[in-house]
Image (cartoon, rainbow, N blue to C red; front, top):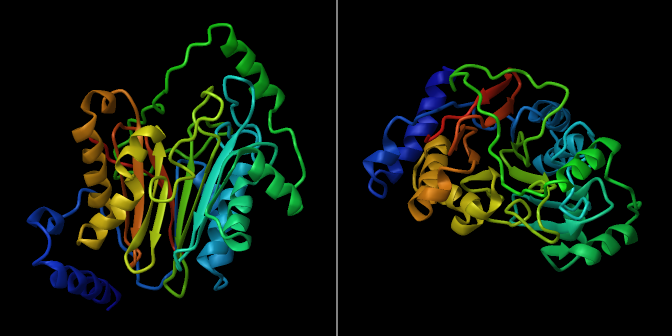
Length: 342
């Protein structure tokens, strides 16, 4: 009975759109999962998304709003010094300064963002306050920090002894090359290995749908390791690192942000879903767009997209092998390897 309901929901939507989309959009997706409509779900990038999802699920399972869930969820890696690409203990820029980028978006098109924020662990919470307490969408640099202080955030040193030591070692050569994440050979339809004690990937992007069927998303990072001071990637840019449309779905991205910004990647994924593509196939189409406009660079870097649609279906796609993502529902908790172009 439940399976029949899922099929009805899925194919009634696709059938209505059939005259507007290509056969490719309606073909069996490369990677496909579904859940019951209106059942809460949270998905997030990378292995460290498991702990983040658990925190988010504590909100969702009690009927909480998806916005509260995604903020609570991503605060977990922000506070973990073993995750050297988000929040406390993050890898600094080439000047030894930890600068954080984050954004958040809810089901009502409200959004907030901070860029180049220093001295505050929970950049995502500052981004939410920008959304709720100011007429703006983005605050940056010193202005973002002063706003955080005025709202009760304490000035803290985000550089740990371990990340400071690594930065000083890097200074001896000063060679800067954006790195791919380590390839994971596990087939994408099998579970990926559970997270270890340390990770050095990048952004955590989180998407959630609550029991009322409303969507929200959050994205937070310290950006590329040893970047130029002042560099901003896709993560805090609404439409690039994150986009939520409550009528359609939500998407987030991870990897080298410059490539995502060029195609306004997360918005592009949502628009593909609007036109009838499954989340996985929409993510794949966005990845293919990166290759189309920058084929040589696409071979050298990693970008991954993760998406969910209004019916709780989810999927991902990446340029390179190695992109993992975590899922949590009432009866599912796992990590999966994303399929990739290369």
